[in-house]
Length: 180
View 1 (cartoon, one colour):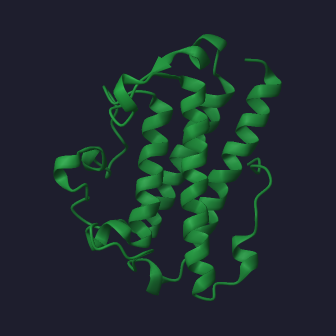
View 2 (cartoon, one colour; view 1 turned 60 degrees about the vertical axis):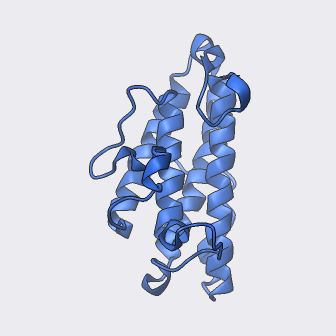
View 3 (tube, one colour; view 1 turned 90 degrees about the vertical axis):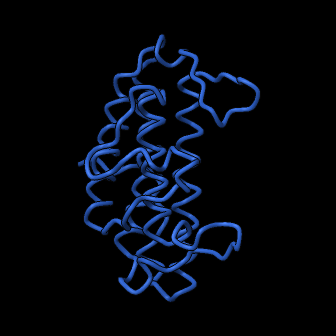
């Protein structure tokens, strides 16, 4: 992949991550453990604000890794999100600081992954259990899916915050990732 593709993919992917970070920062403490939506078929903790953030970050990290085999999130996070038999729920809720640290870690991992992605890596086939009938996609397509997943949850959380009166400027659209 040439530098143009590295740059534009990072700027857009990073912007999606930055929007998720903005929602985490803007979330009032009173909403941190509140459900984002109501679904009687889902355990209540699974739809709390913190959990949606954790879910988005866990899968961001896993998809950047590119395989379920050999993947391990950083401490204190575990593989429970990946284990359908477990619910999937962590043993405890995570704090804003823990999730912001995970976000910082995953953002840097994403940037490094994209900036160093070779044509060979981009084309590498990947497969996850959730894919239909053994469907295989390229690693770069998985990353586009990954970016859409992050943006979906950033938008979901921003909508919730807006419905609870969080000022719009705290949740403004991020056009491109900001450089450090």
